[in-house]
Length: 368
Length: 265
Ligand code: SF4
Ligand code: SF4
Ligand code: SF4
Image 1 (cartoon, chains in turn red, cyan):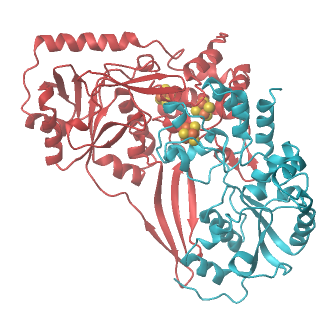
Image 2 (cartoon, protein in one colour):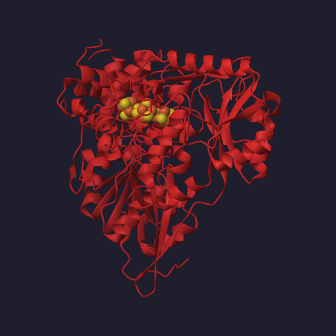
Image 3 (cartoon, rainbow over the protein chains, first blue to last red):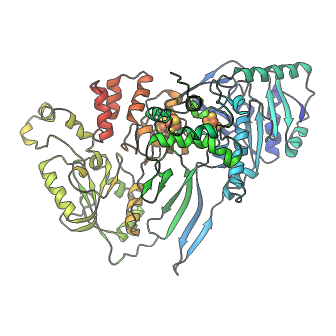
């Protein structure tokens, strides 16, 4: 629902309204050479003029004179670390005098968190993680606690990176649902739409101006340009049949020669949800801390069952990643697990490109 | 904290071979937990802590250092014979240490270059890992190992379970710590993708590249990483030397390093 226009000079008011409503604000910032989410209190904290240059295995930030805060595509984080923490204590156990165990569930601190600058692919990924962690089997309490008070301010992508392919997966570059507010950034300011009741309340407090015809036209041109700029794509939306018909394709062995089995792709992937359980007993043996930590289908432990590692080589690990993400997710969640964010391409230290690998296996096309 | 001393405490020893003594500090740096630890196990030999009884039979022997002299070769046999469970700690004990570089060179010539009276130096031609001489029950990698690794191993042994091996790639820890990858964002020649976890991705979290002090991870693709480092503009010999550093004696690193330093396949 379109609600109005916020001139650039008034952006601070959005942060002020959110702060007044009890939200801590996280926003994009340039840290250690990448865009990451960090606490922001003033609009000047945002990465004004930053542009990201992404390619397979490559990420650089360039500083430009542009007045824009959101003229970049994405950084290594999506919303995943905020809701599915990379490592978190779930419970603690203490041995009692009678030999029994006292268990204490540890919960994340309750806080209202507003995230500014969320992308369409991030929202699509969050919807998938919701289905996994808040699924039919019951809510994951830690995920649910972090998710409940999340206020999402999306930004439609004006500048997809060279590795983005959300058009091909149908998840972007315009955010269409799952946000509280969505912003379309123009040089002069922001077209603001609300996507939820609480978003509408915040928008109403902002006393937005009417959206001019020029702004509306510029927004449409920008959205078209963002769409046509993308050149990567997957060979289809549902690759389940073709992937599972090609389990012995020679490409799996070939990519295994290039792949480090390092798990960077699964870690940055906003939909991957695998974790390991980590038990840390106290030295005196009287207590233990039970945590979960991000795991990956590229680790040995991921396929270890008593005395046997099912996937001991990189060929079968890479094949697991691709056939699950693009294949068996359909059976599990009714869609592919890829939202086209391109992160696994940029943040792969050796630049392995999921779209190229999928094409090689699914179309048999030799791409050398 | 309960420091009630258990009656039949397992007995432990800390033996030193060719090393800098740094790994033993992982015990001494435990602080208050060192008291707790010694209430759980009885240290009978730990020269750096003032306990000297190297021939005493023990349940757990921690061995620091590489095998570098003919006396070391005999002594490690005696340690093995007197220990139920032998734990090699640190890069020297698990891979021969930095001093294993002499395995790849003319060690005697180096001695002659460095010492005024080389005749007094009785070193073997090679510096080797403990496991190349006796059966090792557990290896804790790292240069140096840290207290967390030691405690986890001791605690597992006291529970009577096999200690968990940590052998994932440093990248996994790096991403869990939400560190921005220094290879992708800065083009630094990071060794994390072939290196074993344990340090908590210490170097990348300070913005520098991992230099592989925890040794090879499981299933390391040294060839693919080597090619990537070439793509970053690093000369093959320099890449070779990154493999031939602290853990040069670990077979995957020895092979990868020699291949690049000498430029043959
Ligand atoms: S598979 Fe890659 S491109 Fe697709 S959602 Fe995951 S990280 Fe993004
Ligand atoms: S595809 Fe790339 S990021 Fe993923 S495990 Fe292989 S080398 Fe690592
Ligand atoms: S900085 Fe090094 S250890 Fe961390 S993800 Fe990148 S390559 Fe891996």
